[in-house]
Length: 113
Length: 111
Image (spheres, chains in turn red, blue):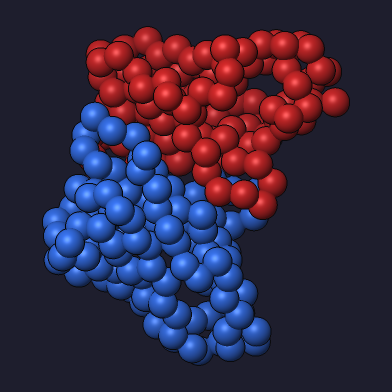
């Protein structure tokens, strides 16, 4: 596809369950970002992958959150033992090189009930 | 840590008016970006700035990368109803650094 693709677009899960969110970046983009956006709020940085460098995990809010990326392809964000406070839109973005403009996907709306 | 202060938080204007918003930081950035987000959508990149002093236009939108590298502004001329949305600035210190976002400016236009 031409843009960043995220799946699922919506996810409703029960408190305590694990969820996995997927991001397919634009082909050839070396940088990939995950952000969280609570209703009516700004973008909260979670994690940043750049090529084969060690990811910047400084934004992950707790050890229940983890993310992986294989090479310069798909990334998955996993949230274990979900809590109601995890309800938000999770946005993924990619850019073709460090320091270049990043393009966002449509996001995954996560609702924990 | 790196923080961006974006202002104003919200704007209520008449259609046809010009709009100006800005972002400031205590940190120096090498890249400044401006995004627009519509309800239920991901942010869309409007303008990217890569050099101090750079002034870039995209249709009715104009943005500048401040000379000190600590600020940027976005202007919208002759606003139209489809300009409604939330505008975010973002800065990046360098290629190895994350993108930092401002808190957003919510633009509302009265017809």
